[in-house]
Image (cartoon, rainbow, N blue to C red):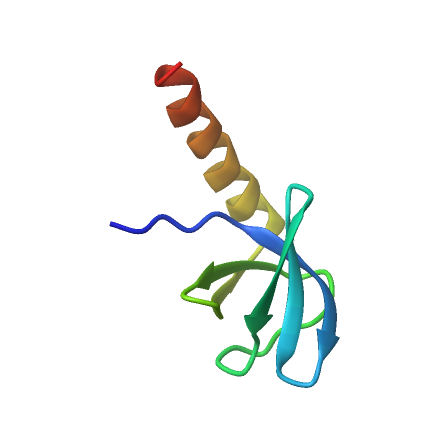
Length: 72
């Protein structure tokens, strides 16, 4: 099972986007979804697969934090 957490696009160069995940950055293919700098996105297998609004992204991050806290 794979779990994707929201990241924020911080730059785009052609079809490649740099996505920030709480200070960790990855390069992802931005060719599948219309994406712009500042978008909150989900990345799977190196590809941006979805954009999301801040409210939904914040909710997902909050739920992931709750799950993490339960395992500690």
